[in-house]
Amino acid sequence: MLDVDLDGFMSDATSRARAEAMCQALGLQSFTCVDVYHRTRCYGTVIRHMDGWSIVFSGDTAPCGNLIKAGQNATLLIHEASMRDEEEEQARAKAHSTFRQAIDIGRKMHVQHTLLTHFSARYHKSPHTLTASSQAPILTLAYDLARLRIGDMWKMNIHIVGLECSLLLDPNISQVVFTVITLTLNPGAFGFGALQ
Image (cartoon, rainbow, N blue to C red; front, side, top):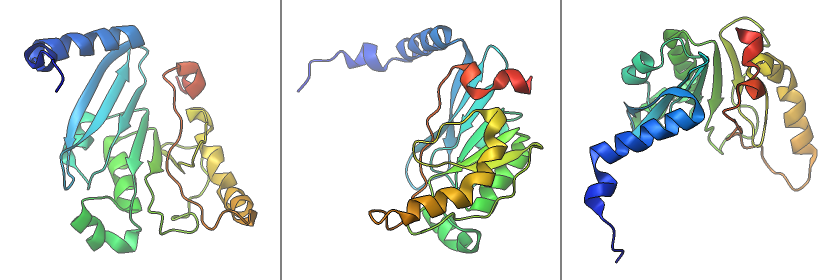
């Protein structure tokens, strides 16, 4: 058993002080955890930077009013889309979101960009068809190890079919799984200058 002072470690005052120190070190106006609706205790996050940009991450959740309210007018919404639109009942039972529901959350939040992620491994190809647009809100899908600037997100939709074909031509890959995109807190890496 570890000899840890849990009173100090778990205290509200300590947590708040550490959160404030983190925000100051990263130039954040706020970093907020939001209760979301899932079968176990889950949280989304809303990150607001001093420079005016903001990112909302849904975590695992069914459509949730708390997240919509907390993430209003965000620059980027990263939202799970575990189920296809025709699997709405299954999504409800598992407390996840369909593609259409995740897109609708972004519209209700009035976000500039929506990035869908956390797709089921059951899908062997892009689970949803997107059309390229440079008009807000811009919508795209996350791919493993993908890196892109927010200002360039609309271009990703043009490359989806090519990425699928390239990956499926590799004999060592039997399916394409879409999951994580790498993000940094460097505003220049996101292309925020072009958005302001």
